[in-house]
Image 1 (tube, rainbow, N blue to C red):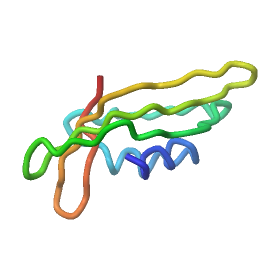
Image 2 (cartoon, helix red, strand yellow; image 1 turned 90 degrees about the vertical axis):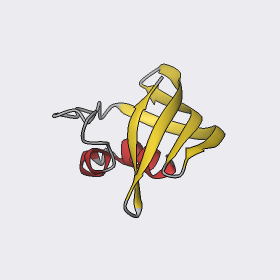
Image 3 (tube, rainbow, N blue to C red; image 1 turned 120 degrees about the vertical axis):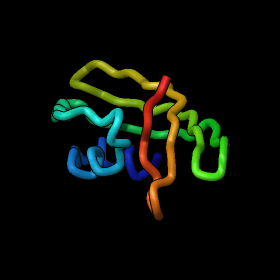
Image 4 (cartoon, rainbow, N blue to C red; image 1 turned 30 degrees about the vertical axis):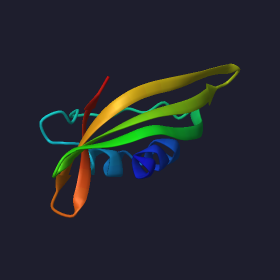
Length: 89
């Protein structure tokens, strides 16, 4: 989760695509360069199976004078040595 947050904050779409499960990965990922990610708090992590987990997080952002936050529970799956993002609610 932290590595994906860093990729979002740096605009690293190649890493985001690589760390996204093939079945839910968008074909095109268009990030807003004016959006600045300002913080990440991991609220909860839960192992849900031998190769699956969920992460509940809050990420904050700024875009000009506007600020906001994203709260999500994300599902992840281990593929080999790596974890991939499946989806979130």
